[in-house]
Length: 162
Image 1: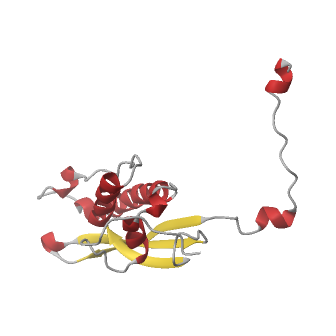
Image 2: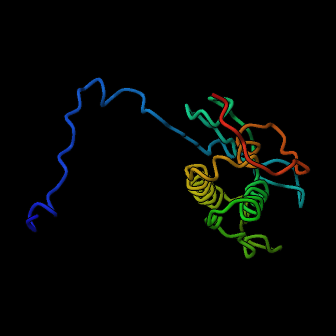
Image 3: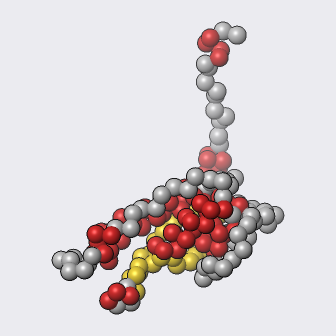
């Protein structure tokens, strides 16, 4: 074979307009939205709405919406780290300086910080959920679809529903 033939680009298949704008063969969309701060004093916390849409057969529901706080993301990360064979990405930091008392601002409850954290945990959950091996883990399914996380769940793999 000639050098030119070895490095020749593969020509893309022509696509019709209908194909280009049709629902993708497989999709998993996860949005982290609507942060809400609850409680008063040192009992305050912020949670986020996690909206999932998918047509992947491994998920038993195609749409879900649950609320999760940062500690729930920590739980998911710990479970995946312990149970799966994937390298789990880092979460955005804990922001300990923002938690110190006697600050001149609202610390971790400042809108700017909440938005930064929202973007970070959205990137985290999309990286994790996009990994084919993570999609088989029961903890990910619980995190994305169950209203309350059962921390006493039995770890394991999920079988395709179809």
